[in-house]
Length: 149
Ligand SMILES: [Zn+2]
Ligand SMILES: [Zn+2]
Image 1 (cartoon, rainbow, N blue to C red):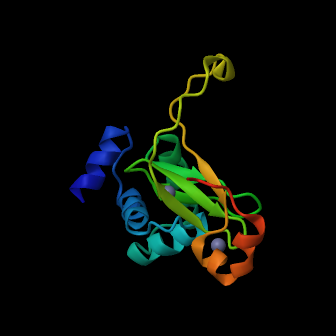
Image 2 (image 1 turned 90 degrees about the vertical axis):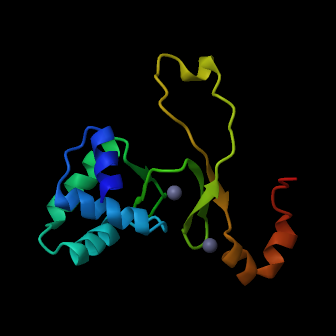
């Protein structure tokens, strides 16, 4: 409870029981739930939260930098509670979003940034997750994959 209250405070977001439930749900579910899944989860914890309230809180918390929205083309956006920095891996086949241990990425060159103010950056790696690779054993052999060595 205190950790979540502290996080909300640190980002200038007023503590409400609904926001608490939303953060608690996201911190316990690292599988990058969609907004609909978050609503279902929050509703189990606090049946008084309306869908509109949950969605509005989710949007506010993304804007406050507490929650990250991971866009997945052609599918619903996924969300996670920001804590430990990490990159994402999105599977082309099953659409699964996985966390990848953080590794440093070079800063973008000033010319590419222009007048923008960069707050943060992270990578999205795409390809096939290990279960999809296992389900199609010839694939990795045929394509050779991208060598990471
Ligand atoms: Zn997959
Ligand atoms: Zn994540």
